Length: 274
Image (cartoon, rainbow, N blue to C red; front, side):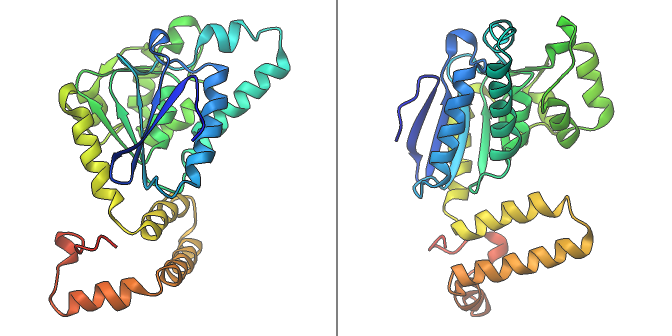
């Protein structure tokens, strides 16, 4: 795997689980142009990495990600329009599209400060778990701006209008408990239990059939944007693709085992994990 300056990649943190850590702790893991370049490259690399069945994103130190590095992303590029456009295009693409369409399940492990542009990372991940003590905030209004880029779109995807605007208009921070209450994350746990909890969750998912995992994510992401008939057609086509990729294992193996009373799929996977 490629070595990076602003991120760190840990393989086999749990079986089939890769952890990607934002590694700029002195800057609260704020996203600078180099981080956007490296995230673009790393997600492309992990996209095709068969050993990565679930991807966990987290931050080094006291922060998950403090949003955009305001100095390096805006002030330093104020008179460099081409460099600014390149940075912005990469920033929008990996958070708003690549991560959302990543072919393996993704989990945001929010360990600390999560501000501004980091909301889009959390929203684009399939699941999110926060430390109860994590601090979330949309501070753009405090320096005369609004949640720009893909952040406002992410808010609309994840949170209802009145809650989104309450925090966007006031800049008030909130903790992991509140993030769970409003649906920005799935749940919150004590900070000391966060990594263990998330890795157990990731390992539980990683033992499932990879074709089924990919289809579960893809069909959900695309179906919610489709009309009913198109969604049904797409779902049927993906079901046939999964069956072919598995050599019909779900029907001949799993459902036959269920019919023979060997296991109950409503209560867990078969021991094979496939």
